[in-house]
Length: 456
Image (spheres, rainbow, N blue to C red):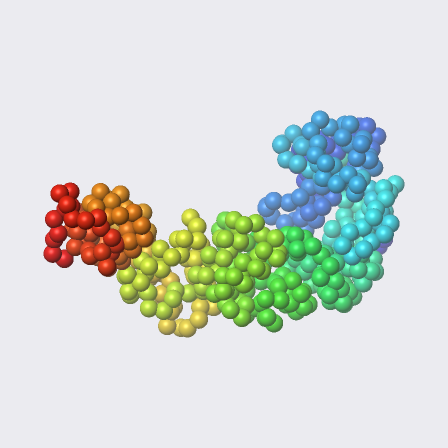
């Protein structure tokens, strides 16, 4: 495809890019007011590469400046007007970014000073990779592709727009974006682009933790994170953003990440990454410090930490030891409502991928999971709050409020873990009556209200 064909390509028999109706309406409104407007972003890229389904971003690039955009639409949100971006709600209720044509004035490696541009071509020339430097006009059915992104997609190549080294120095986040796009889209990074990317890796230290976390989470949420993470390792980016992991992430763990699906999988995949550090995720303090450094929310950090503490396979000895199994369930459940299920999801993924440590544990996850499920269905308590008696029952029988009551209830819970049939009010009260102050707690002086003592 020569340069002229790259600049203007049409869809032929039908539209090359199918634009959502709400996006088309935004374009129409701007165009009707005389502002040239094009669709850009992931929606155009994924349509050109004929990617099936899945959520994509539909952004607009326009000659209108932010004040003019706000004047045209009733529902808008300020998303960065100093950079030319206004959020506009479409008729479908979704928020779309509408950005004025821009050109870079000064770049710092973390952000840029921009000026509004006159042409779409100026705007596309400042973008990171050719596959992201395409624009589609839904009414002319015209693709603007001045840098050959369509051809690169067809050839499976990721190429920087313009001079590769300069492009990465302009914004070091492009290093992580490039690794993500190459891994997610299954693209080979062109030689000069790879050289520029690898040379720019030290600049990742200049990025804010929030930007790093956002890119990492996007990788972990993808269908096959192993491909992008392998590139993180090969380029040295992993060592820069997660030095806690040491020098490598085993291929088996990467394979387990690909197997780990379901909702909020990015959090559980992050837990798997945490298990690759020198402490294998067993040091809650170090895991928490890493997640805090990357600015994960408290809720996400708690969930990731709980899953990481569960390890990659069941602990030795608990599969055939019911009390130990119930003790493990109770301890794990303290990590949150999803903690036990999260650990099970990790174990299953690791088991299917073959990454589980030790061949002898091949069937251990499913056996343990089945046993825990049976306990839950049978109502085996996981905490003293689920016992058939409470601290009030002990106080009513003469026990003084204090730590002794807690010790007595924990003793009862251990007994129930040995024999779940004991979780009966009468049976437990009989055991309470048999407890001495030294073993279970303190009692008031014997009196008329003191219940009779029973043999153990």
